[in-house]
Image 1 (cartoon, protein in one colour):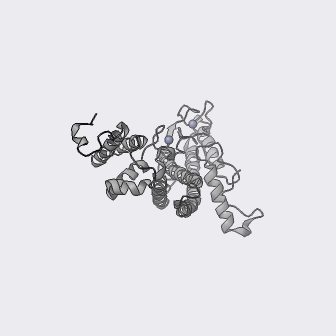
Image 2 (image 1 turned 60 degrees about the horizontal axis):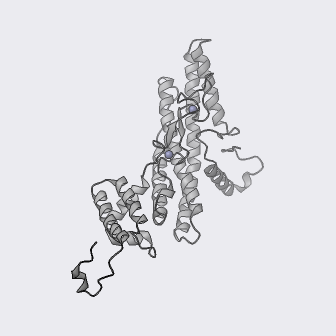
Image 3 (image 1 turned 180 degrees about the horizontal axis):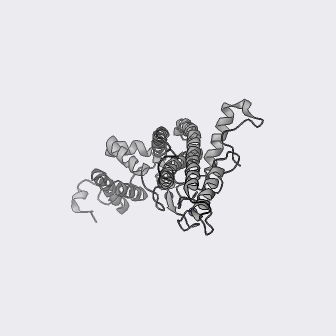
Length: 313
Ligand SMILES: [Zn+2]
Ligand SMILES: [Zn+2]
C-alpha cells in the first residue's frame, strides 16, 4: 500500500507498518474528534475499537499513556464518557416490571413485590445503577471509573439525604406516593452504584496499587449506604402512611378503601426491621451485608439481640 520508491532512500524499504498499525493510528484522532464534538459515547466506542486494533502499547499503564497521547483534558473527558456510559438494557437502572405487567399490583390487587408496587423493576445487568457494567470499560480505566462513579453516587446520596421525604398527610395520597416512588428509585440507584463499587473493588487484582485507596472509598460508600437504607425505610414508611390516609378518606367498604389498606399494610411490612426486603427490587444483598458488618464493627456490644437497625434475613 504505501511502499513507494521514496522509502528506499531511507534504507528501510521493506519494513512498512502492518495494516492494523495504520488503523490504530487512525483510531486515536477519531476518538479526539468525537470528544471535541461532545460525542462522548461515540468517543468511548471508537476508543474500544482502537484498543482492539492495538492502539495502546501493552507495556504502559493505559491512563498515563492516554494522558500523554491526547492530553489531560481530553483524557478526563474520555474517562467521563465511560463513567456515564448508559447501561444497554435499561433506562436509568429500571426496566418494565414483567411480573405485574408494569401495573405495580398483581391480579388480585396485591402489590407487586418485585417492583415494590412501582411498576418498574431494577435492571439486573447494572444493579440499578443505570451505567454500563465495568466489563465494558477498558481494564486500565476501571479504577478511575470506579472512583468517579463512587464520588458521584456519594454526592447524589448526600443531596438526597438533605431533601425532605414528603409529608404523608399533606395533599392527596397519589401525589405523595408518586413523589416517594421517584425518591425511592433515586435512592436505590445510588445504592446500586455503591454495591457495584464494592464488588468491583473486591475484584481488582491485589497487585493493583489503586486497590488500597479504592478500598477506603468503598468503606465510605458502605457508611453512606447505611444512611441510604434508613432513608429508604423512611420513604417506604411515608408511602405506608399515605395509603393509610387514603384508606381513611375512601368510603367504608369500598374497593378503593380495601386496596389502600392492603397497600398500607404491604409498605408497613417492608419497613419492619424484622421482615425482609429479599425478593424486592430494593434488595442489595452484598451491600447490605457490608453495611451490617460495619454496624457490628462500630457497635461490638450490640450483640445479643440489641441491633435494632436494619436486620434482615
Ligand atoms: Zn411489578
Ligand atoms: Zn441497566
